[in-house]
Structures are given as C-alpha cells and as structure tokens.
Amino acid sequence: MASLVLLLGLLLVGLTTTGAQTIGVCYGRDANNLPPPAQVVALYRSRNIGRMRIYDPNQEVLQALRGSNIELMLGVPNPELQSLATDASAATRWVQTNVRNYWPDVRIRYIAVGNEVSPVNGNAQYVSFVLPAMQNIYNAIASAGLQGQVRVSTAIDTGVIGESFPPSIGAFRGDVRFFLDPIIGFLVNTGAPLLVNVYPYFSYISTQNMRLSYALFTNPTIEFTDNGNNLPYQNLFDAILDGVYGALEKAGGANLEIVVSESGWPSAANTAATIDNARIYNQNLIQHVRSGSPRRPGRPIETYLFAMFNENLKNPEYERNFGLFFPNQQPVYAINFAAQASEM
Image (cartoon, rainbow, N blue to C red; front, side, top):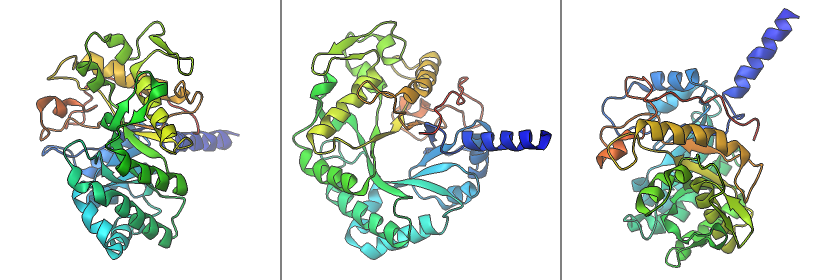
C-alpha cells in the first residue's frame, strides 16, 4: 500500500509539471547576466512552471530542455521569416534542426512564426513573409510526422484591434485585414490557436481615468455590462481578450481558440510599475485564467507570463523590469504557481 501511495504521489507531481497547467512563463534572453540555460530549466522545474516560451531556437536552451517534461512554445525570430517563406527547403532544415532533432525529448507544443508582425507597428517589412513561412513550417512539420502534435501559429499584439469597447464590437483594423484574414483562415484549416500578447498594463497607462483595480483584477464589483451581449466585465484582461474574440468572429475565426502568449506587469521605472502592482497582477492572472472569460466561461485560458527574468539589455528602462526573477534567480516578489487549472 505504501508503495502504491508513493507511486500515485509521483504521478501527481508529474501532472503538475506538464499539460495539467494553464500557466507558462516566457524565457526572454535580452540580457548579458542571465544564468546558464541548464540552471534556468532547473528553476522552472523547482517553481512548478510546466510551460515555457522562447523567442529563438537557441541550441543550448533546447539541449537543456531534454527530458525536463516542460512544454515549449518555440519562436521563429522575425528576421528569419523571409528565408523560411521563400525557400521550402530552408523550412525543412529549420524543422529538422530545431524540432525533429529534439523530439520527443523536448515537448514542443507550438511554433510561433514571428512575433507582433503588423502593417502598423513598425515592422511592416516582414508582413508578406509571415503566412508563407507558416505554411512552409507547417508542411515541414507534417512531413516530419508531427502534424497535430506541434501546432504552427503566429503571435499578434492587440494594436491590430481597431474597435474593442465594448468587447462585443471588437474588430480588426481595416488596414490589417489583408494581412490577418488569410492567417486566420490558415489557423482555422489547421486547427491551431491564435497567439495573442495581452497587456492590460499598456491599456491602463494610455487611458485616462481608468481605475487601477480594474487593471489588477481587484475590482470589488462589475465595471460594466456589455449591452451587445449582456455579459458583465469586472477586469480589463477579460475585456481585451473578448474584444479579440469579437474581432475573430467578424473575420471568419469564430471557433478559433486564443493562447495568451505574453502578459505581464513591470515592477519598476514607469507609471504604476511597482513591485506590489506586478505581484498583484501576475498572481491574480494565474488564478483568473483557469475560469475563462465572459465570452468563453469555464474554458481555461492558456497563458504565458512575461517574463522569467529582468532583462538588462531591453529599452526603454521599464521594459527591463517585467521579470519574475532577478538574474541571480532570486524572486523579484513572491508568487505561487501552484494555483493552476487541472487538465485543459
């Protein structure tokens, strides 16, 4: 009996560090003082963080992830999009080098082909390459026998939303539809979610007279009811997310799921950027996403906190202070990753 109890306990521990989680953490590496990847992976495991996002296929990081049981969102950097879009053999080599060579020792869950590419946010030079790169990577994944196991998507920011309040009228900007609509069609056809970087912090600091409690999940009452769908909204995260769902419905993606590929709050160097506010936001986010949003109630929202570490090479200065940990691996503030959803 004792051995059976021990075995059950080990199985439960395994579940809490893999697919049974809602929360992951982004492992950004724009710093010159971070610990080695093997130590970072050990820190993820010791803190019960079962999912990771990285922004490029760093071989040392991928090697450190072998056998860790951490599920991975693997990024294709924007400067690599052109070569992968224009040369299918380059995509095949990329998948062989960065996916097939590590599978299944590294549990790659998604490939994020580009990050926040948009016709309207300063990196329009990559726009024409995103979808062809996604298609070539997807075909290479399928040829490797990993179709359905590794899903191919791209990460957008909410600046592509034109109308978003109330959430029921959410719509993509007219000048991005030519770019996003074909991507949405690709995701619908392949069964992959849309990756969305959602930052209530930036909405809060750019909007006059918004209550901080509304942005930090600490509102004691409903902030407003959306007359378009009669749904109540108590926090800004839900309002932003459901605005994106509203936009997807109007662009042929009504059944698409959203994975929140980044969300966080800085702890220093800008308006409302305090350690206490960052702790409150991130802890409440961890607890909140297991219950879904008003538009998708009861459906846990897979979410990746940004970021694991403060990154000293980022600019402006407040961008250096989104980390949950200092580079010496000490926490910036206490946070509990255990309060997460059961199997999604």
